[in-house]
Amino acid sequence: MSEQHSSNAAKAPVETSKTNTYLLEMMDIEKQFPGVKALDHAKLQLRAGTVHALMGENGAGKSTLMKCLFGIYTKDGGTIRMNGKDVVFSSPRDALDNGVAMVHQELNQVLRRNVMENVWLGRFPLTKMGTVDTKKMYNETKAVFERLEIDVDPRQIIGELSVSKRQMVEIAKAVSYNAKILVLDEPTSSLTEDEVEHLFRIMNRLTADGVGIIYISHKMDEILRISDDVTIMRDGQWVSTKPASELSTDEIIRLMVNREMSNRFPPKNNKPGKVLLQVKNMSGMYEPTCHDVSFELHEGEVLGVAGLVGSRRTELLNTLFGYFTRNGGEITMRGKKIENVTTDEARSNGFALITEERRATGIFGEANILFNSIIANVNSYGKLLLNGKKMTEDTNWVIESIKVKTPSQKTHIKSLSGGNQQKVIIGRWLLTNPDVLLLDEPTRGIDVGSKYEIYQLILNLAEQGKGVMMVSSEMPELLGICDRILVMSNGRLAGTVVRGVDFGGIPGEQETIMALAAKYV
Image (cartoon, rainbow, N blue to C red; front, top):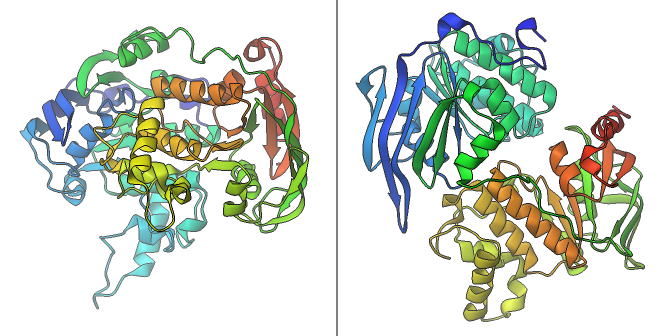
């Protein structure tokens, strides 16, 4: 790690790259969708050579504003200027050709093609014969990766990479356009601590070259560390723009939610009871998977699952849910042996799984809220003719009980914010009345206000006697709401941390978990 950017260092780009001249000005931007005004005179002003954080709750309009910049949406009003000149991009390709690149939170990649094809998709270098110049494409991809210190083989199939490596490839693709404005939407949501440090070094290098970076994240410590300026939005409107040096976490939260939030986590009133689920020596059949894992889940318990990227936390849940084939071990539910050979069998046994990548494996993006709410429980609405009234009532229950912000049940779920999409997915599975709820990164890419609501929902389920298993990469989250934490390391259970009095405040707890996480690496 460079001296300029050590793990504890504040952001320190080359000072001469910063300027008070605006590289980008978005003023009085308006955008209307059926039933909702997504942007209401929103604004953002980006200086060259700086990192400008864009913050707000899910649904505040951050992504909509950036999509108006990037040519995905057509703004209904306002002006966009680059270097003092008015611009309107008709498409993302138009934006890229004019020096604006965007790395989306949800990756859009052709998983069955190799890395370099994904990097140069739509602009393949050609030979004099008009065929794709594979050698040039490889060399230029390799050159970009070497510049950014990304250790990925350009010839590898991108679907074989981890989500974190795929995200770094997408960042390299954006950089390969030589963009002067780079938008990063939740770029660290799938990255390890080392990879986050790597990303920050890349950002420092780009800002030193005069690139302006718009950084969308809900991670307060990252925002205060890496940003020069912070703009906060609420309900589609601009609220405030201030230097990051003048802000604190509490002040950012207050501006985002328009209220004080002295506690990040709801009070815990759940009381774990008798054993609900017992797993003995469970292993998956195909690599990468979990090996010889044994644990118990109690009624009314929130059981966390910690570990580094690659620790097989997701594989543990998928094997338990029957999505991955089990090679050995026993699963016992309330003293009765079960198999969970398939996901249908797991569901009939009272299991529910909320997956890590909601866009790829969670939502049906082109379908409406009603469809996404009832699909897991569709068999309960009739066999030949579905009970439309009951489906409408159940969808209303999802919207009202979990506080989903949506114009109507007919709204396409892809138009909702990430947090509201996640709420619909959780509501979908709650309609099946599960006894065991498996949650894989349930608050990934979700703002602090929506996180609190999801924490409250999890604890409410535990108070009802449900058993909850929750994978999370956020240590404060695990320490804040879990009763016990399983620590996975390279597919094996390295240990269990038991919640005690003032769990989050006991010195050494976090260090203990990290030490266990590295046990079998």
